[in-house]
Length: 243
Image 1 (cartoon, rainbow, N blue to C red):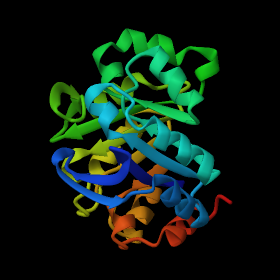
Image 2: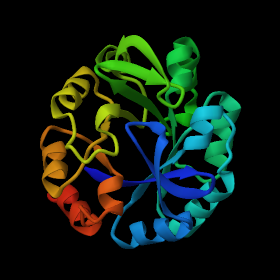
Image 3: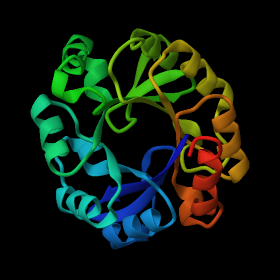
Image 4: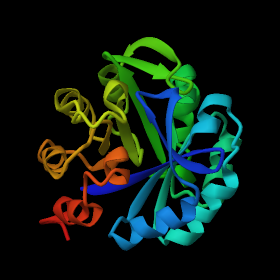
């Protein structure tokens, strides 16, 4: 399993939102590239980067910061936020992302996403972002709810050449309350695509449990910035038995 520390970008700064609420934001650092370097030094092999401005507006307002992270860290970047067209995805990969997270656009036009996943040069380079609040998926920066459930959508991806399915429990995101392990396990059981868990991770025990239930990765955000989790220890724990 991989631990993916998160860098959420807004106006070029490293921030965290509570429960996806843009009005409940805390700024942690002004230099995203320096943060990425610290994460890499702690042993992170992937960094989960989200352009919050692009997630909300579709405009990649933090492109300079993303490029700086990619060049500074020497690790692979999983980039989300604003991946709404094929051109957006190509641009995000060109900016230095190793994997692009597609969420709202995939759920809005599933046929388009299904065709995109079959593009040979994108095999393993796309992740499907499934963000749920009280079991229902939410899109467009978590501002709009859908009727579909994460498990229903995850089931459709079985056998696809996706790099990952990223499941986020919005109610727990940025709250340090522990992940929704039952919901994560249901998503894992629904697909053979690797599942990365996000939302609420607050301790090494949370990391251990994510590994035990079969997560391919776990995203760590606020717990890292507030010193609740030693990233180096988390990375070692995640890789035990796997090299």
